[in-house]
Image (cartoon, rainbow, N blue to C red; front, side, top):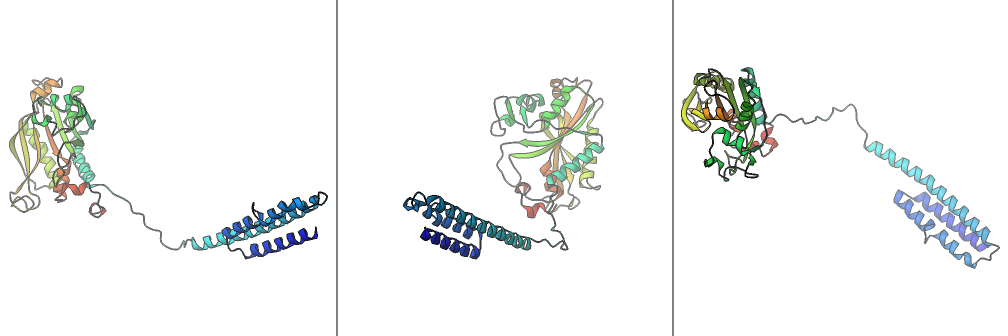
Length: 342
């Protein structure tokens, strides 16, 4: 009996010494395992109970349990002390100097495409136009047929158009929005339709399989080509400057007749010829024309009573010209060094 009591006293003294010297939670946990674990010192004493006479076992059990309680209490006291020290060190390390200036937050801004689009919308809304959007996944009927583009037209070739099924595709232009609005029959119409379009093009400095267009439409009684020219001249002057001149060249589009392409005088050199306009003094900007009578008929309008004009311009083209960017890919590469200039 006295030998067991002495062993327990020595175990408790050694535990107290190690607990007092423990420098961290890991060390404290190692001490718990060494003295209180399954293979610990106190557990070894309990395993030797088989050698103790039955009448003495209750007393030995009490000694072991008392020693365990005292060791656990010492460990808990030291744990609380270590946690307090750790918290104090963290508070010291993470202390905030409220007198220092705040760290400036980097706030993003509008993309060059967005800036150009908002300017175009501002110009046309100022002339009484509505901004209308439509679906990017479109029916072949709206994307081609109702725009007077026949089944054998090259634009319908799978090399140019992303088809989902025989009748459903990714729109190649925002003109389907115009057809949908004309079908509704709410006249007169003065609208622009901005949005993303898709064509099977290789990526290079001036082409991308995904880009943006802004297409406009006016339908009313008594609309003439003079209205078209006047509208687009105002648009060009607002966008590129009051001294901008416009020039119309005959062209062909299936959905307009007559059709034209519009050039603007180079706003860099004033039409004298420079590197920007390739020495010509003029820059091609958009396509336009009077809405084809057959398009009006297919959309439920009487071409004898109503007429109108349409035009379309690439949003990226406006951004490239207005901000003198020489590679369309820069608009989509998300290089913060480039985008932060706008």
